[in-house]
Every structure is written in structure tokens, then in C-alpha cells.
Image (cartoon, rainbow, N blue to C red; front, side, top):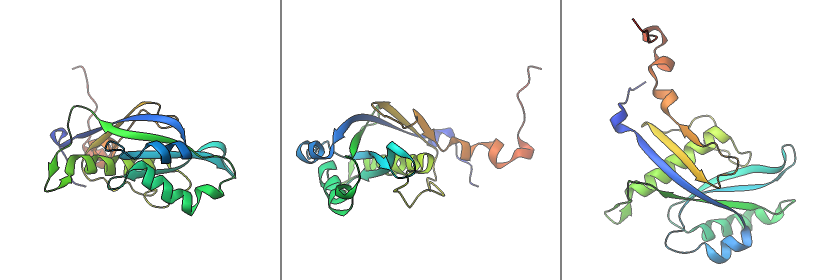
Length: 175
């Protein structure tokens, strides 16, 4: 495993809003700032009501456009109404447009989605459950109405010298 320094650490901060009905997302979440990560909650046959069913990302389309495609594919067939939580990225590192693309923003959205899927394992997500695929040290911080998401998920465990090289790891002592 490649060791990374903490200077390479990327912190992704997400502010969550919800619950929002699918209809309200379709009607209101189609503006310039309506990009990021989203959560879909509903009733699962085994896990029961208020289950985190799916985590997705929106980089090119708006939340409204992406949720509309889910509605056409499967949301309308669910046993109970789906509740949506929308996560918008923010924090101290502003997004930068490089060559017509929002590099920092898209990278943060992608990392956040992959880590959240890996750690939360929603039943309707099929990819990203066995490995998060994030290669650089990343911390995702979830704020406000995050519902069932953990406050923090990260790759720091994977980059720890304890988890990768147990024989070289030393306990701190007071001597």
C-alpha cells in the first residue's frame, strides 16, 4: 500500500437538507447550486421503514434531473413514499473551474459518494460496497440534517501504519 502524508488530506464538507418529497425535489432543486450527493429513504422489504435505500451523486445534472430519472426507473414502484436528503458541498476550499470543469467540486462529490456508499452499504447501491476506491486520504464531514449518515467517514484507517504494517507500529509511551 502507498503511504500518503497528511498534507495530501482532502476534507469534504457536506450540508444536508431534508427530508424532502420527490415531488418537491423535482419542482425546486434545479438551480445552479443544486449539485452534490443525495440520500433516498423508504421502506425496504427486509430492513423495514425509514431505511437508507440509495446514495447517489449529481455532478453534471441537477438534483431534480437525477431524481426524475430514478422516479422513471424505480421510485414510482416503491411501497411507500421516498424521502430525499440533498447534500451540498461547502467549506473553506472553494470550487475552482479548470478548463471548463469544476475539478475540486467534482472530485469532492465523487469521493464523498464512494465513501458514504462503502460505509453505509445502502441495499439499492450495487457498486462500491466492497471497496471505496478512494486513493488519497479523505475525510467526509456530514452536517445539519444528515439523518442516518455518520458524522464522519474517512480513509484514514486504510492509510494508518497500524493497519498496513502492524509489525512496525509502536505504541506511544510516556518514557
